[in-house]
Amino acid sequence: MTHRLKDKIAVVMGGGASAPEAGIGNGQAVALTYAREGARVVVADLHLAAAAATADMIRAEGGEAHPLQADVSRHDDVKRVMAHAAERWGRLDILHNNVGIEYLGGPVDTPEEAWDRVHDVNLKSVFLACKEAIPLMERQGGGSIVNVSSTASLRYAGVPYLAYNSSKAALNHVSRIIARQYAPSQIRCNVVVPGYMDTPHIRTLYRHLAPADFAEVMRQRDAKCPMGRQGSCWDVARAALFLASDDAAYVTGTLLMVDGGASI
Image 1 (tube, rainbow, N blue to C red):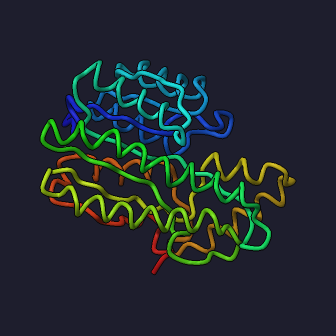
Image 2 (image 1 turned 45 degrees about the vertical axis):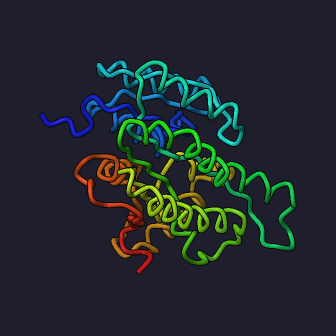
């Protein structure tokens, strides 16, 4: 078996089990996939128990993983995560930024504090992680940054999530700027752009619905996808694996759509 990330060191920000009872989410699937492909993985999450659950799954499969608690919007927490990788292994090959939150509302009904919190978690977190990771990657001669956005960054999907939409749109361009600035240093920066996904996060958002109503919501989401179905966390993980690996050695600054054609 070919291990595309053999001997690589990966940090996954937001790699914990967000809702274990609802299944595996995007960040957790990415962490598992990186480990299965040979990477040693630092799993960072706001909740240590969530990070530990992912690390335990990786270890159960024979991989190496280290869970850490971190609020990705706090610089000191982000510094500690990157320092852990540097002190333990002396390098950092892959930075994966998965964290994302939303607030339902447009410009009139979104409180200022909610706007700030969404942008802190979705956008400032990536800025902080790159601030700490890039110098490590420069010293070793390169690395790969994979950021997770959303098709909500490209268009209005019928529900006003203004803070989320704007933070992810900014993330797309921040990623392109980083890609261009650090291309001479062999640091690649790319974006996975998921569309409608059937994930624990979505199931948590609609947990208040009766089973029949939830089934109808999911049917409608499936129907919005040209392929007739939503994607899964593994679709996101496989796209991230490609961008993180040497298979994408000449790919940087790209937005990789993982949406079954919904953005076309």
